[in-house]
Amino acid sequence: MTSSSTLAIPAAHQAQVDITLPAWLLSTAERVMNFYVDRNLRLDTLSVDTMPAPVSGKKYMLYAHVPFCHTLCSYCTFHRFTFKEDKARAYFVSLRKEMTMAKELGYDFESMYIGGGTTTVLEDELARTIEHARLLFPSIKEVSCESDPRHLASPEFRQLKGLVDRMSIGVQSFDDGILKMTDRFEKFGSGLQTFDRIQAAKELFPIINVDLIFGFRGQTEEVIQRDLDMARRLDPRQITTYPLMITHQTRKSVKGKLAAPQADLARQYSQILTSLRGQYNQLSSWAFGKANDEGFDEYVIDYDEYLGVGSGSFSFLGDTLYVNTFSLRKYQERIEAGKMSVEQQKRYDTKAIMQYRFLLGLFSGRLSRQYFRDTFGVNLDTALFKEMTAMKLIGALKNDPTNPEELLVTDNGNLMGLLMMKEFYSGMDNVRAQLRKPLKNCDM
Image 1: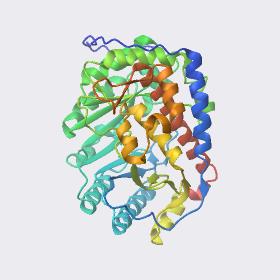
Image 2: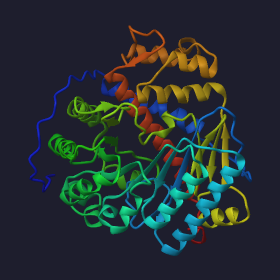
Image 3: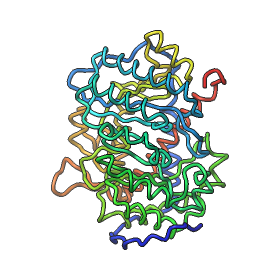
């Protein structure tokens, strides 16, 4: 596939990348991760009227979900419905009411992340919702939000200036061939149009993040390099490079039609690391930023506990995962009745939570013995002996020679973190598919 881009691109800074993991080991790791994710994400059907109250001294993040899109992409597994203005406006009203319920429980939040769907389907409602959140929760230091490229050109988009600190743009690819294959060309325009829209939107927000996806069929080394070079030419504060994720929900539409062979993953990932290092710091296995201390899409890394509002949101509080109803009808009914929207939950033992935090530590490059000692009162090397031994044997981890409390994540570790996080998110998407399956027309 070829791009219509004719931009002059500066040469990438070359960085040494050392990935030595064989394909069979990556496939084995995928299967093992898939087993644990499937086992640990089986939810209990048990609704509650409200979330538990906050614990004094703990830090929390607020997640808000906007489940509407003008068009539905075949490879996307997030919770979303086709946009209808009357339903969307009523939904935003309920979303603000649910935030007020969280305030009445005693919550305050340091950060807010708004995801979708397409969060910017109604910019005026979104602006009103952010203003409401900042009024309720004065400790919020940063609001992160997502948008697709089309909304950047809308005059109403400027309403978000001064309200959103970090805007993440779902580009996926600047290549017109990839955009046509994924039905994004007609929806969002060409790669060059997206490039120009992002360039114009940069002055609106302190942080712009460009989201790219690799692993599409036909995405050659040249196509990936053009995508990376165009993203670097924009010079955003952050670039995120997700691998294409195949789930039970998207297997028919993605595998064999949109997805490249799994064997290409390590080679493509090496190319990404080589291209972006030097100009960007690595924030996680797939996120890169100009500064090391900025928030990014994987908010679960910075916050052990978070509360989700809105249909289809997830919360993790204490030792329990809570999932809000996926039915718009039930969501509105529960909020109108003065109840929060939790429909499912799952409690985890300490070992499972430690394994989850180990995964996030590997993925983020922030694996700390001190964190496990302070949080769980355990010695990481013995409490997760199998996990630590396996990662050290394959060269994913090594001790930090300057600080025995910290572990260094190698390039092999970055790839393992990417692979394992991909399987974790695919498992979460399978949960979403399972909870959406019983929905009827009256629920949408």
